[in-house]
Image 1: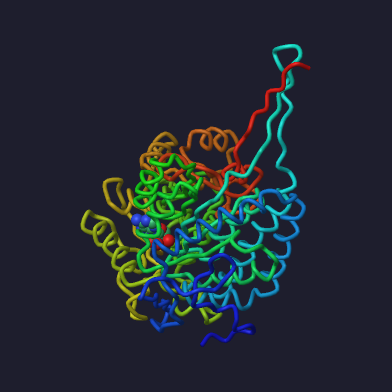
Image 2 (image 1 turned 90 degrees about the horizontal axis):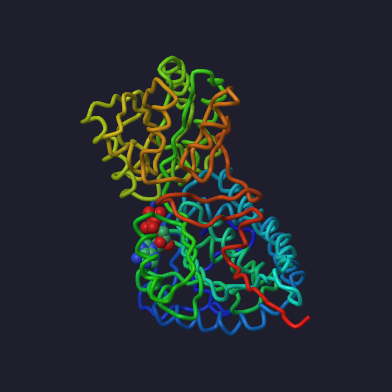
Length: 485
Ligand code: ADP
């Protein structure tokens, strides 16, 4: 059992229409600690039938919820925020256990996740429409923003708390009801959030959580059911494309936060120590398992040696292990398949001529661990350059000119985050404007915050989460044309 102050936060059932229920499936999900392989608990498994029922209840709940005042919704969201902050130790304990990230990082994720709830509680009150000057006398034109309706959210295992709040908070703030399907590897954080939402007074059916052994079956119902008006997905580009296709038949609005392949560019005039610090923060957070992790280090030839030497030295200081130990800064990967996938990319790069500067072979700590690894002499034809790594591996590539750096940075299908280190202000503008990414970190390796828009271009998806734009994904604009005035 986990050492929780409030054991009621550990849930083994689904949360549908304000009730804790077993799924219709005979099976259940074994949730395991990736650092130890030990089962934390089993969670009931939902089927298509459970999912359809949760959608029907969300549609019913919507009728009342959408009529509530923004202030009322804001007050309930603030209650939820408070409860999350008060229960941070338990929530971080659950998150560390099911996902593996170090406890300090888990706590940071709880606060980060909660910050979206606080932010959207405030934004709920600012769902303004417009008065538009008409071209005709005797007419008045205006717009209203209204909740889109029932929302479905499918979320990944790398941020089991924050990816839920990032979608649920704007949906509830806008007056939508929402059904979340968390990843089957990490459902416990989502269920704990649902328990706290219920205690906060969020009405039944407004926020439900379904999860199951067959995510395709649940996903099918969420995408096919005509009562669902919007799908918000965070996960792989491959699954995102499937879900977009599935949503086409009922013409749902979709927002997709898909894979990245972030370039991290170090120019000859960069502050190298600052770049190394940013590189460590961006690359090794969550053991490299975030969609904005630096994926390719492009370094000007004149500072290649200095950056590489300092980066290797700083990376060597990172301690790998079970994230419950406060000394550990790099925890396990989510499972052994993830380790094999990362190692396969490293082997592929070595076969094509890359050199290992650090790490590069599976860890002795167990099948779920992979050591921080740095590869030099990487080239664009390698899979490790083209694909998202999702592990603690840093490939380094040298460049000579700004144009070359730009071409290398932009030559993938992904367009989520990018990082640029330079002290030249004209280059900062020029380069940032030409990068094909939704997010640019300039002399900064940690870019994510609830006050700024998070999202990608190209095949990294569409829609923006957080910021003043974050509610747009959950609202429809209605135009009223008033004549005869
Ligand atoms: P990752 O590579 O991070 O595991 P995935 O895209 O595979 O990302 O998974 C992200 C989320 O999508 C998880 O909740 C997973 O259960 C869900 N998922 C995966 N495949 C499907 C599918 N075909 N239909 C609906 N959901 C899916």
